[in-house]
Image (tube, rainbow, N blue to C red; front, side, top):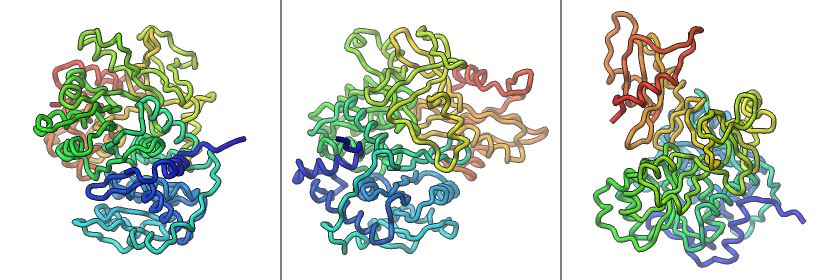
Length: 529
């Protein structure tokens, strides 16, 4: 007997066994699993009544609210495909993604309608559904979300028999190239990733999970599914605010969360951290640049946070590695622990196989020295890039997905990233393309040559540094360059620091040597404060 692997089935299980248990807390609103199930079923039937069919695509631009959770289940259980949108990107990128994804419908929060208004004439949509929010002005015409689902008989929706290999979501990358790529993820890949989430983060029925990580970001890393699977509590967070987070920690006794190292830094440096009372031990998964050992110690001392470093990509649902912490590591010095925590780690149990290979596809020696590329295959890898066979073929070779991240393997099998072949900068948990910034800078009339690299930053983990050669007789300041970038791209992508130089390191054939720039700016005292 074959039963399809789909995270949608976990909603059925939660309603069956925990109908009266609190499922979702969103500010002053609370929903039991039975109530949450009814709202998602209403949404499903409303979508069908609006002409949405199995396989249709629906774009969703919402913050971490109960509406966003409802969309994950309400859309996907119809067999339609959800396209979660990063509301931080530029209107130009929004228009590109909505149209490129072939979305028939957009569900958008009132707070983001100003961006949609700017591009609405360019969009190929049948309808727009707006979540009206007190305090935020809706600037476009659309169907009110509550009205959309209100007049639907909740018992009329009958879930489809879903194929585990059909698309569940298309998640667009936030900028490994100038144009985002649509990563096609299936019901099966999301199921297996969420299984890893549950197993390695120790998710259990009593957990109270705080959605600090944007749900649009690879489906909340799988948290939108995993917490429902065990009947845990979803606590929504509209905006990352350290004081609000700490209030929620105290009020709801949060036991689990995910986020970039910047979130940890924000929490331990918020004055309120010394005033709250927490009676539970909490866990947190973090990815990107590993947090410093001193920061981890502060998080443990002040919040009781047990930090787990994970690694993955949008293309892998996202988890493929985690830093498996052994009790013997606790006997080491803080400096030694810090070095260990910098490692991305070992394979997660359910995702498949991951290794580091050389240019010939052979696994590198486990010596912590031989550099190679991280490749993976298995249950969580994407189907490919939507409507982009060429770039799909570029990353799939000989049955392996090539991540573009360069790493070493230590004698104990732990993988550690040493460089990024794609030159992606991970700042505050967001991926930023160095080539995209360079493209903007080259449009500046004073810029002759430029290179953008990541440099360490205490708060953001990494930030973009723009290294520039000016044209002859050009006069421009660091502030001018940063302002220019902020005016021409999403603010979070703009460089935080600018260095003016006379020349850039290159090979004999004229190829830019970014690794030499990284050596210069990472090994010197010229780090961004």
